[in-house]
Image (cartoon, rainbow, N blue to C red; front, top):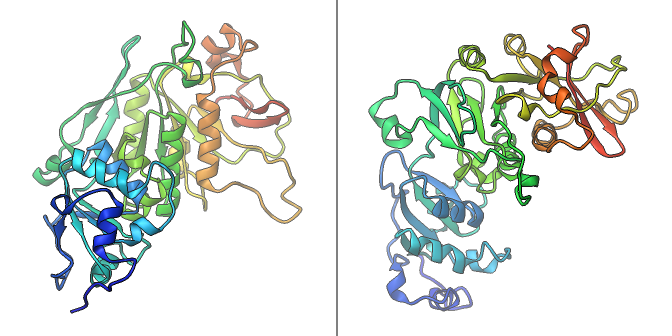
Length: 382
């Protein structure tokens, strides 16, 4: 059995560095378990300081144990992800803190799936993800999004709970400081065929940063919310409202009946020359934006459910070197930012209210046209 070395990594030095005393820790450096210690069979291990802090602060999970190695102190970090901050959040959440030394590194590496954990691992229950059947009809001037849940097992109920609504801020974030902020309808992303957990996490991170109200994941076609995806989200998944659907087509059909507009992210037509004035869909109705995988994009049966298409027109010709699109996480962020941008003075009330009547049905897609002022969304029926 290995013991801690008498050097700068000595646990006592590490203990003093986080401004605690021995009463704040359970001294586990002497005994190293033969295998990973699980509090429950469903336990997950989150790794990295940013994800750990987010989980401790959000308190959406059941939190069991925090493992800290001196490595967590030595690696650089911002003011918000120091070891002191991790310990403070753990104390506030009444989470057991276990101080470990090098003899635990094999166990910690197993906990993190051999991925870099930087000396910080949190054991917790799975992240709650509501399995939804449909998004309900929105009530005027409300700040909640209601939904119908599919039946759950007792184990799923213990993790996900029975909540049937989430809160959202019904104003454009850029206008909240104004005396009379502008009302908007809710906006959610629906993700299909996102197989890379890194892309899934990155999209959730962008959605949280931009103020998107929820992310809906197609269970049977997307990567699961593994520790890799959670790490890629930089902790955003701990606070973001994440929902899941087993049958995307039924979900969309029912949500459309309930008044939700559905947009599909597609590759813009290179032959499309006409660009309509920019509109603000979120002033018209609650909105779902579907985003598909990088390979084939959205599946045909999902595109058929869309009332509008949206895309990003590149600034360079694909003939140059063959680059014809953005990474899916980047594209989702660009489109989401455009949807969440408040209307400008040039956006007339008639364009917003009568958006569905304004367009020429011969136009195949909504595109994002590059202008000197950024990206302008142009809408036309699918």
